[in-house]
Length: 149
Image (cartoon, rainbow, N blue to C red; front, side):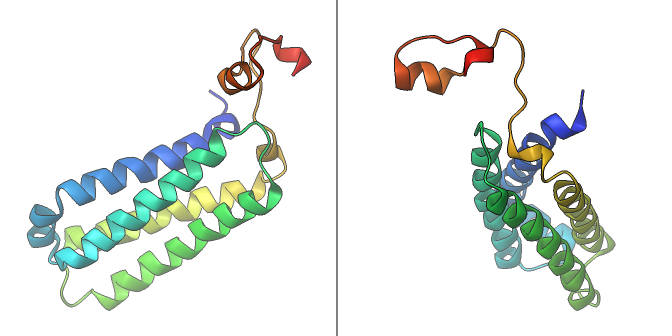
């Protein structure tokens, strides 16, 4: 698997999984992490909003550079915020809560760095041989070969 080809999908699906997991387990995680439930719900909702943006960008054939840069900067900003919250909550949060914030910050920071590094390559979705773009078929009502799109 070429990481560059799947990076936006990894980013979006990771945010979706984190958002759904934290939102659905927020009551239990609140006591385990030693963090307020409202804070965990906020984290989950931000992850879900971010996932919708990232996945919608991943599904596009042509990705505007501005949106890729916004995605990378959002990841880098979220990483800094996660680490800041780890410092702010260090007296209250359990080691598991702090670990969650630090690891999430590390994960999204690495993704943001890779998206920044590969921003030119991420502008165009890689095409696979003999693949038909479903949205193109629905929009145009006919099939076109992958090389003619």
